Image (cartoon, rainbow, N blue to C red; front, side):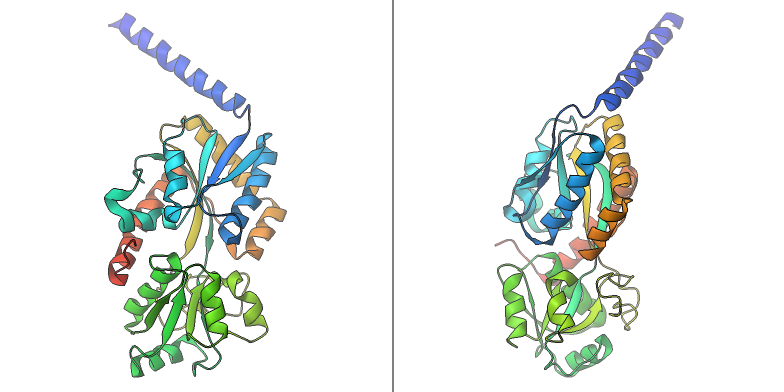
Length: 323
C-alpha cells in the first residue's frame, strides 16, 4: 500500500513538473488565432488589436486566421478539431452562444465540451438609432409611439438571428411593443436604408453609425448595456430610459481546444490580462466601443452557460431560424 502511494505521488509530482515546464517553454512557435468572420469590421478589428499585443507579450507571432462562414461555425469547428497544445485558439464572439440555439444538432462541435475557456476580453453595447423623421427624442417616447402604432415602426438589422436582431427582439418583449423587423444581408445595407428613411430604426454597434449620429443625420436613442458606451457617453442606457434592468451586451472571449493543459491556459490568461491592461490597447478598444473585461477560465465557463440561456430565450421570442 505504501509503495503504491509512493509511486502515485511520484507520478503526480512528475506530472506537475512536466506541466510547469511546458508552461515555461510555451510558446516556441507562432500561435494561430482563428477569427470566425471575414476581415474588416469591428469583430476583426478588435481581434487584431488584441492579437498584435498578445504576440508581443508572448514573444511569438500571433497569426490572425479569418475563417468566415456559417455564422462563425466554420472557424469554431476548425479550433474544436485542432490539437490541444495552445497553438490554435478561437477569438469567439456572441454568435458562438447564439448558434447553440439557432443550429442545435447541426453544430459541428459541442460549445460546452469542445473548448477550454481562457478569458473574457471585452463587452460592447448595442445602440438603437432612429431616422430624424421619427417623432421620438428618447426611448420612453419611442415606446409610447410604438404602443400607439403597433407594427407601424420598422427596424433593420444585418440579418435574422444576428446579435443586433436578437437584442431588438429582447427589447420588444421587455417593453411590450410591436415593431417590424426588416433583415438585410450584412451590416452596411440597413445603415443606407436608415439614412434614406426607408426604415425607422436600426440596432448596431455604436461605431457603425457614429459618424452619422455626430453629424445629426441619425438620432441615438439608447444603448443596451447597464453602462453607457465610451464612444457615445451622452447617450443613455435602456435601463436609464425606463426599461429597468435591461442589460444585454455583445462580447469577445478567447477559447482553446478542450484538453489544453491548464498551465498553458493560465499562461495565456495571464498574458491576455496584461495585454488588456496596456494603456494603448485599452484606448484602442474603447475607441471601438469595446470595454475591456477579463475573467478566470471558470468564470468564463459560467458566463458562457448563462449567455446560452439568455440568447436561447431571444432566439425563441424572435422566431429566428437558419436559412
